[in-house]
Length: 67
Image (cartoon, rainbow, N blue to C red; front, top):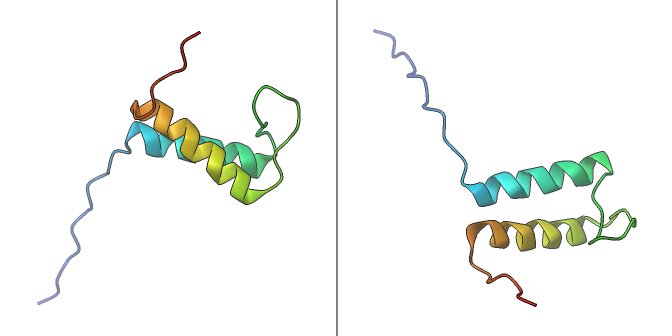
């Protein structure tokens, strides 16, 4: 008797993981900018830092700056 594999349920990503994926995709395409400047990010570690920073803002872990 052969065992058949069951189809795995599609997992939904949290908003933070989606944001990280979006930012890293921008980096891979060469479209990720550092802040509001026109400087394109070329360092992978800097791209990861930007992705984690933006993801924490999405999750609401970091309070937004008030002027």
